[in-house]
Amino acid sequence: MQKGALVPDSLVLGLIRERVQQSDCDKGFILDGFPRNIIQADALETVLKEVGKTVDRVVAIDVAETELVERLTGRRTCKACGTGYHVKFQPSRVVGKCDKCGGDLIQRNDDVESVIRERLKVYSEQTTPLLNYYDKRGVLRRVEGVGAFDEITRRITRALRD
Ligand SMILES: [Zn+2]
Image (cartoon, rainbow, N blue to C red; front, side, top):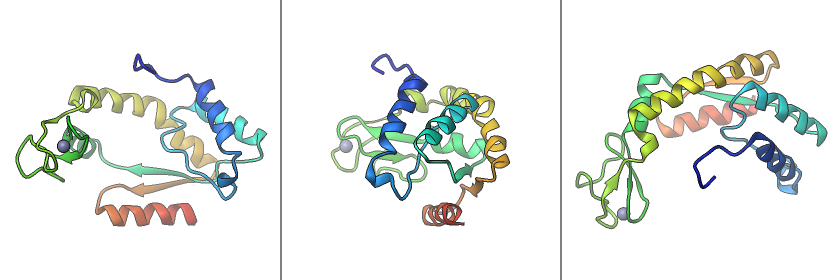
């Protein structure tokens, strides 16, 4: 992890197996950002089956690529206190300076456009097939991810309940 490499699937799956058996997961749990490919999804299904659980909802949040690039490339973080900003959606009062502490706002290396385009390419090659995978199992719900924060939250809540 210190080298910035990804954690191996077997480790993540071991952690999930252990965590979902704790009592606060009796009524359910949410996995955010996992699985990201078919191999992980198959392995997750096996692990959950072993502990008597199943994936009963998958929420895919649809956002156009141009919108995603705008959201991600606009993110800024205060170097001193870590407060998050967005150049368009949540700008600081003084450009490049933190409202709270006056520290310099920086762009994280992985929020640079070339890196984001690469992440989106990996997503489209490896993660998009999961839509079909979970749709076939009848658990997929797609949510429009453009709009007001509260409205999108309501859509996700509804998708989890239906
Ligand atoms: Zn700050």
